[in-house]
Image (cartoon, rainbow, N blue to C red):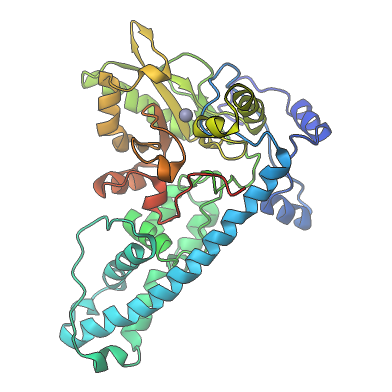
Length: 402
Ligand SMILES: [Zn+2]
C-alpha cells in the first residue's frame, strides 16, 4: 500500500477474474497453504500500470489449461536436480575435507572459511556455473586410503556450515528480515549463491515471488502465479514514456542509476515499462500470438505468470536525448553502453544478454533490467555471469515445458 499512487478497484479486478474461468489460475501452493490455515488468499491489489506498455517479455498462455501444467513441472525438475547436487555435495565434502586433513590444517579455522571452497566447488560441479571468486585449490591427496576414511568432526562442521538454513539467525532473517538481511545471515552473497547451487539451501525457494533472487523464466512460473508486488512507486526524477510503476525499492535504485548515468556523462535514461500484472500479460501475450503465431510470440513476450515484469523487479529503459526513444532503439546508445557497464552498481543486471537465447528463451534485450539487489549484482558482475540461470546453477529454460 504506502507509496501506491492510483489504485484500480481491487474488488472489481478480482471479481472479474473470478468470473472468467479463461484467465483464472489454479490456486498456488501458497494459496492452498493459506486456505488450509484459514487466512484466505492474499493477492491482487493496486496499481496496474502498464496499459500502454509494449507487450514483451513473458506473458501467459493463450491456452490457460496449458499454463497450469507448465507451473508444476519445473519444480520437480528442480527438486531432482537438487537431490543430485546434494549427493554430489556430500561426496565432495568428504573428499575435500579428508584431503585437507591429510596435508594441512588449512580448514581448521572458522567454519565459514571451511565451507567456502567446499560450497563453491560443489556449485561448479552441480551447475556448471563459473566459480565466482578465486578459491584455494582443494588439497591434493593421492592417497586413496585417507580419502576413504570416515568423516570426522571437521567434515561434519563443514557440511553443517554449508547448509545456510541452519546458520545462526538465518531463519529469523528469512521470516522477518529484508532480502539483504537473509544474504548477510548466509555469510554474504557468495555463500548464499554457493549454497543454492550446491543444494544446501533447502529453505530458499527460487520460485518465490517477492524475493530479489526469484528466477522467473519459461520453466519457472511465479508463486503465487498472480503475485502483485507492494508497495510500488515510480522512479523519482526519471522520465517515463508510459506507466512505469515498479517495486518501491527498485524505483529508488533506478533513480540512483539514472542520476549516476547523467552525472557520468552518459545522458538521460527514461522508463518505458515497469510492473505488468498477470491479467495484463494475459491480454498482451494473446495479442502477440494473434499477430505473430505462438512460436514467434514466445520469443518476445512471456506467458502470464512467467513475466519478470510481474515481479515489479524488472524495468525496460530507453534513451532520452531530446525525446525518449523506443526500447528497440536503446542498444548502441551511450546510455546502453553505460548501463551494461554500471547497472550492477545499483543492483541491476541485463537479464536477456546477446547470444544467450538458448538459456533465457528470449532474444537480446539490452533495455530490460532486472533488479537482484546490490549484493547479488556485485557477485554476478565480478563472476562474469550472463544469465541468472547460470548464476544459480539452474537448467536453461529456452522453451516452455509443454
Ligand atoms: Zn522488459
